[in-house]
Image 1 (tube, rainbow, N blue to C red):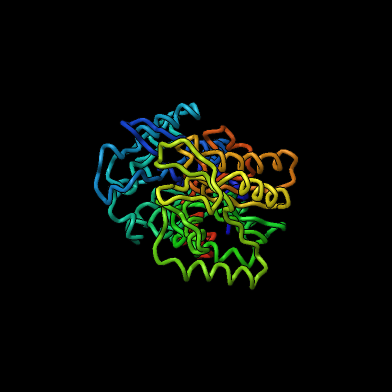
Image 2 (cartoon, rainbow, N blue to C red):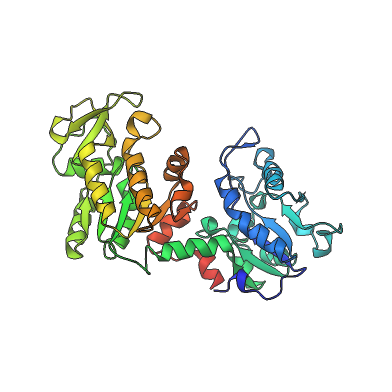
Length: 392
């Protein structure tokens, strides 16, 4: 794989830059800027090299139709303020654009094509569309790791028609993920939450042979508690998971990987309740398990304290209600404490987990925070990502 930081001459080069600017919009206002802040380094790097930048991104799922509420316009306006540079949004039909049409004014440095998914060819990984896009630039840079699990034209097919490079953010993402999958410093721990154990079984199975500890929290832990013969009341539970759970424990024994799950919990009668700590044998039929209890928190803290690498994906409880956020906050604080004395390498991913650490303004207190969602999870499962494969 070639990296854009190693390119010798980018002066006046037209760079087709694939970014993920798919940020949440409410009435045209960006409600979470994390993804935009992450791409500022590549923009500033290319500007410092005197490149001409053609930004390509998508917003939402327009499915090949132009939709005003999914325009790149508010994102361009926000980005302009962040970099203090004018960005020209081009809404013209891409199939009719020529290279010479783009940087017309002397001071044009950045242009942005309208939402690439307004074109139905994008999600078809279309060869003709890729050739047309390639004709607008001198080289291609993928700095959208979070889109790289998609075999889409501006992620995958485009690399067949332009010299192609990995961007700074994509490189950082791969470096961080290698430290928790292949270039591991042990002992290594994975803390994994979420409501469905079936959606994470691929990750768990792939990581057990490499990891010393797997900590299961959140809704998926309810399945394990129930499997072990505990009452879980009205709590979230996925059906038909017995074989999956048995497989997890059998595989963990085979590879001497320790599995940690709750030994006590916080319950409520509904999502708006105050919390009450309970032992597993005290859970009633009308209880909802919504967080881990103090004994479980202490057990997790001990595991983190004895770890040199930690991967965290998924909160420990229903943190949207502060009464059930303590488990997640205590996990965060334990990792941050070790981060501050540089005795752990921490990787965090997943939208809810990022929202949680944003709540406590701690996003800079972890070594790497991934905004990649599906690509992050598929990489951890050991799958080949089309966007990464195309760059190789």
